[in-house]
Length: 271
Length: 255
Ligand SMILES: Nc1ncnc2c1ncn2[C@@H]1O[C@H](COP(=O)(O)OP(=O)(O)OP(=O)(O)O)[C@@H](O)[C@H]1O
Ligand SMILES: [Mg+2]
Image (cartoon, rainbow over the protein chains, first blue to last red):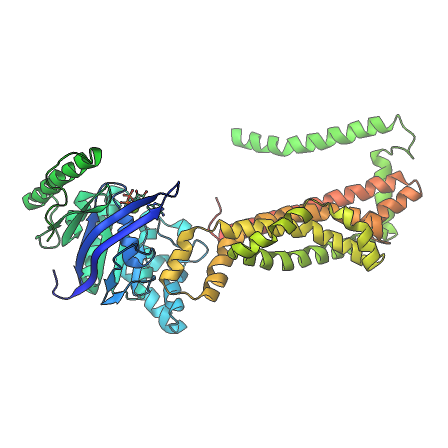
């Protein structure tokens, strides 16, 4: 982990009002420190609070306890320096690819000439300069997500939050985009928080993998992945990490199925 | 080959329907005196007569002008109002009882008051067209704004867009395909009420031409007038469809 902390979370809890005046605890007792320029993956079974956690970090939700801080400042609302990328892209269908990428720059008041140059530059970065005049409905899913990434990168955010950004894509496109994302991250050195269901994706991308568990949502374990990039998905070390995560996942599932049961590893070893 | 035949069939079917319709009309009209139920040939002659003496053009233009006036006025008021109410749920809830009570009142029921307020002439007809278009546009605009996917707003706030920018650059275009549906419905209801409005309170226009013909027992002119109203309605509807497709393509919603 890099020395200086970028995102700091201590004792974070989020409760949602549920039916019959009840409350549901989505995540509780979350402690997590993310270094500047770090790439962290959040994984865990459905409903364990990954989306809740990332939305709290991005300022889309308000915590019930333990407000996260980024760069030492409390997160109270979404910030153009911390851009969220969604699974369903969030592109504006009535705008061309170029205008979509321009949106963030215009919202920031960047002069039109500069904005245009910058937008075309970032489109070039994701290999979509030729598609600048197209509308989102003319693009494949992978291209759409590239546009969303370009739109985010155009404003040079220091943090990228990504909530299962590649989950809707086919395997080949997903692998390609993973590599592209790593390339962009290594070039730009922004902090990336990446939610995924896919253990291989987490091992391929993350410097650390944060494994979450449900009932109520919490961090089960944090596993540093000490492999150089680009990571060889068929290597023995990769397989070792995969085994380790699967073993941990298995415990998580057991616990989710039988929350009262005494399963070793609950609340396990953080870093 | 098969495709060609199917395409020919697709064109032949509506023509066949029309031919049969005119044929049945012709035969049926033979059993009645022409003042009661004129045949297609009498109506065609009436159309020629109306075209030649200029009354058809004059009345059509005045009707179209009133229609455009009432309809555009309704859109100009209802669309911005709907955009605001869609974004201000509290005010929308406050106004809801009023809207719900006014909406089911037929624009025709407003007619006596409209004449009292505006006198005979263009104004009552325009007012009735306005009312007929107002509620469909208002209600579809409100629901179009409410059903804008939350993700658009999330993205816009994430990039730091200010409220004015969100309203003009996100809310308005995102709601537009939904609003278009309301504009479409409103064209239909407004056109229907145009004739009613002119029958009751005007001294010109296609509606007036039809009542006036009744006073002279010119049933051929009545049916000619009805035909023109129907054909113009169809033309406006098709124009609307074309506009809708154009916008759909622009918005990336075209199939
Ligand atoms: N807006 C909300 N209102 C009420 N409950 C919510 C809300 N959002 C999430 N929850 C609850 O919080 C818990 C965590 O949900 P969350 O969406 O964060 O899980 P997740 O790990 O992202 O799941 P998935 O992998 O399926 O996306 C769930 O039990 C969910 O029902
Ligand atoms: Mg989720």
